[in-house]
Image (cartoon, rainbow, N blue to C red):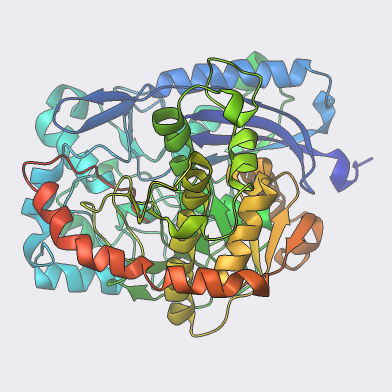
Length: 538
């Protein structure tokens, strides 16, 4: 007898830059077991940034065994594997799917000289015809910084020939993990979004765009075959199932970027239903029915949750990371002013937000600009940097902490205004997920700053695991898009406070002006002699 949906489970893997989360999640989104394992990124001379993809597999395999031994679910309840996580990174693999070199991470810019030769020119750094063709066909274009799959592949082909000659496939991390489970090389329009090598006007055509591939100069024969987004790649190999303690016959679905799993995990899966992420990075997205690009504001619609559907893509490279930066590099060890028991250690985030709540909205008119690693959307400026503004002798640490929370929210409003212009409609409410969403104060600040209702999804830290599992449920035909919103619980609603609106409107009026006035300084200080950090595509 077939078990009901809520009693069947998915082994969900969310491969973040800081390491994977692994979970056992039901087809209806209930998390029965989860674990996070921290991993490090190795930074190399010349803009290199790599991780060991074989280590990913060892960590995920170990965690999978612990999950199955935990007793949280029975073996016969596991029906699928679904991988999500970081994108725009490149894993060079052999015919059997094993890595032949390190994963070249999304921030690795060593391929910049090759990318510039392929697409560079006088129009915003691009050759005009190349830029026009790329945007028209795919909706975006490879970065001349080299920090994307085209830059990675060109770097390996030209500068790491010993690796390149052993490569059978260049794979996105989520597709690499799917291949380790199944032995089958496969990718989708969604997973290959950041490569900009598919004709996204016709996402039902499961081929790469010959013109773009030739123009990029990447080896067409090393691109993994395309299958439909949201399809089943194959079964877990018997030897892998036995090794990990999984039952035989478990299905593996196509991997998805975290953008896609976030949409599903938030329940915002129908056209114009919007989600906001306050995580290490931050973004605002919703499904839309059309392919469209706003190159000026770095907003595009990319292949979405199923063939013929699209998702808005944009990005702030530093969202919740700003609060971590403040804690680790400005506030310092906890002390009595924070009323935190961890003397000599960094204060908890709860302690910081409690401190921020002790001062009124507006932080004493102190403004924080959160562009600590440059900005992507709604302005594309890798040289931009953050800062505190309008401080005085009366400014306290409480003002600084609240200013960081408000600055991230001002940046969200700046982006949200651009996204609403992109879709030509008001987007309200917004489902919020990510670590920052666990703070009631930060959710309320976003509602007050943005003038929109914020709906916090229950267990916001598990949203991507939930999304990966429910994406598998979609692929298996166990749920429909129309019912997902009803399966994702909301644990709190935050309505805009009219009393704070005047304060925040006045301060936000200065926020974009700070960028415009400082842009020339950013260019002078962070130009060729500076050290701008490459940004993640969208």
